[in-house]
Length: 175
Image (cartoon, rainbow, N blue to C red; front, side):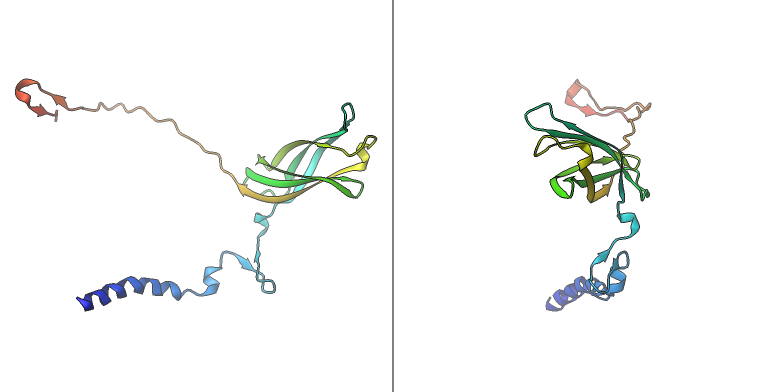
């Protein structure tokens, strides 16, 4: 019996010993490591290159405090294999060179573009649209895939169900 336990333990450990033989280069072959900083370097397909187009900045001074109402379209200039992606980004609003606000947003980019709108209170009245600038910094993104659910087809085959005969308390099923 003691030999049997040693034999079983040996059989369990032997497959794990094969994993220890794997070199570091094979393990990290799917990513690139920077030799100096020892950090993972991402390929171009992993990066977002966002550009702003159709920017509208409207300063609303009708209420008790002025408000910037803005909308724009973000485009991913890298394109890539994923036309849809969940994107998280920061919007920074600047008055000349001073940052007024940083707004975090996330949404789904369709066909490498995303329509964004936001409102931000301004510190004082009399600020013109030309004094304000907007910068967008991507934080993270993840490709998304549309879920296609196919309708369930109705089967034309008839399903036979068991029947119960009342005579003499016997149960039988159809063949």
